[in-house]
Image (tube, rainbow, N blue to C red; front, side):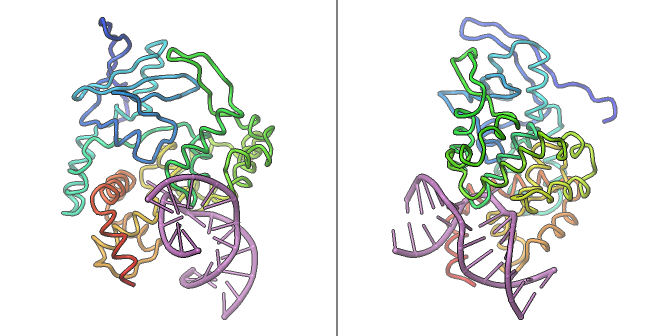
Amino acid sequence: MSDQEGPRVERFNTDAKEGYILRPEGPCDLESTLCGGQAFRWKKMDGCYQGVVLGKQLRLSQEGDSVFLEGAESEHDAIFIAKYLALDLDQGAIERELESTDDVMRRAVAASSGLRTLRQEPWETLIAFIISANNGVPNISRVMENLAEMYGDRAEGPFGSFSKFPSPDQLVDAGHEGVWACKAGFRTKGICEAARGVLEGYVDLESIASMDYPEAKQELLMLHGIGEKVADCILLFSMGKYEAFPVDVWIERIVRHLYFDDGKVSHKQIRRWAEAAFGNLAGFANQFLFNYGRKFIAKQLRKESVAGS
DNA sequence: CGCCAGGTCGGTC
DNA sequence: GACCGACATGGC
């Protein structure tokens, strides 16, 4: 673990397309990873996913266990994307360890094998999850896209023109009115405050990312619009804090149903339980449970939570 | 019209 | 500490 071996990346060039082949360590499923609610700017095209990472337009596709990357300019970028996708992590080992914890988790992992936990850019992730509060995934994506198109740099990419996600100073320039116009609603205040904080330096995301989990979380909780759940999402999806266990309505429903026999459980109790049950793999467990809940028993749980209690 | 969405905030007790 | 209503917006 200490001498981090980089992800395996090779150049490829065929009649159909050229770019890089990324070879994941263990199973990988792009669909659930990119479209499962941790990232919000990936667009599904026919047979591939188009997105913007580090201000560069990219396409990803999958055949079997190989991931194809098109549009990257250099091997350096390809390696960055492989790390963004967490392909260097031994997913097989993570899944095996989680499967051994209990029967529910075994089923959840089996249902979404290859679901990776991304390493996204902290700034964009910070804004995305402020927007996520009491919001739906399609709407979160729409607001993120509005911000990019209205206030981000426009550029020519290998697949046409696109918009980068706005920098902190670009959002500060947009002001409350501009952000409001992007349909951010009551999250506008939090977005603008975060932008100002990062711009002026009293919110240092790099520094926060280097702190341990409890300390980093405490820092994020200072910001308006960031509570326990949003902080945990930022820490998990962009700062490598894998002990974070974000508790939202879906996690609450599925954990209460499958682990607490439909009894009353507070969010704090759930967080403590997850820490004890899954330790430093809690974040991965969270991803599998979230996906499991939404994919297979969403309707069933919704009915019960209305009819019950 | 109603309720819900990867919640948080500012009041209460 | 815990509990509760308000808060924009869009989908069903």
